[in-house]
Image (tube, rainbow, N blue to C red):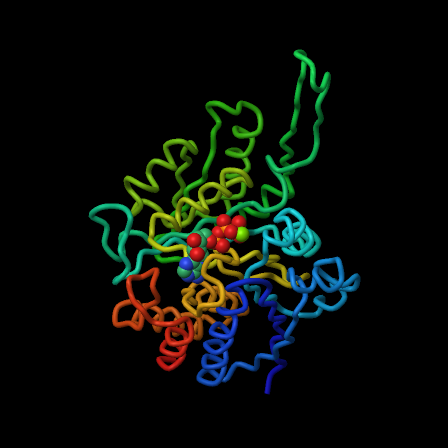
Length: 354
Ligand code: ATP
Ligand code: MG
């Protein structure tokens, strides 16, 4: 038997605790069917419950406890009634992203059959693309400050920081991803007509990195028209790569074009696997529906499929996605999809198909 993949399972808060068991159920089914050795560490910190007990989101040695795992499978974090969102977020998820150098944020946007699309006239297959967001630099820095604060002369400056190292590694990942897909097409989000220093430079880095990928066709689109095309012509896209800010916006807009937030998965990757990568649903802890067993478990389950793909098990990924496809068509479906099934029923149905 080969060395097991070590997965840290962190349910977190709210519906994270309800969808996690369904994610694990499906992963375990896939592990049996495809003979994949998975070893789970169950972790109850990185949660607001832990904060209530200890006054911090995670123990001091969190990094040592997680290092050595191949991946982190994460539910959701946040319980604003007791812990402010910035405390819960900065005390857990954002620490993982930074300290584990998860410089790729990957989000698929795909319209499934059986899921009502908010865009009129779209059918399954019309929307099927991946968004690659730079996750560590760009527009999101704390460099800058305020002068003459509180006076009429008040001035505020916040810098963007792009490095050749940071841009090249995300561009390379995006080109490789495009190369691995059937259409082999990459859209580079830019704004070189308005942001006249960093964005023309970003375009040049895309050309330089792209020189190694002659099979990939590339188009650069300004972020404004690109956003409009997500809505108006989503079938144009295959892989989209963007800086931190543009990617942040696109990675909410893309999945929003494909129906309920209960479906959307995401991955935060350290592709070299020096540190664990993290796989989580896009949705949050949803306090408004927690405790009723009605949350849609698909985003969690699909995130698990992305995790197996990342670990090199495309066979298991594809089987999970096929099972999701079928259950979305045939049911059982949760309330957000117009059905009346529970979280557990939907998770069990997907697991049973694997
Ligand atoms: P974030 O934690 O990213 O700040 P949020 O707290 O604003 O997100 P969510 O927790 O994602 O938002 O919830 C937004 C809305 O979507 C809520 O009304 C919630 O009930 C609904 N929702 C979220 N996830 C699911 C799910 N898995 N199934 C059904 N409904 C969901
Ligand atoms: Mg929230």
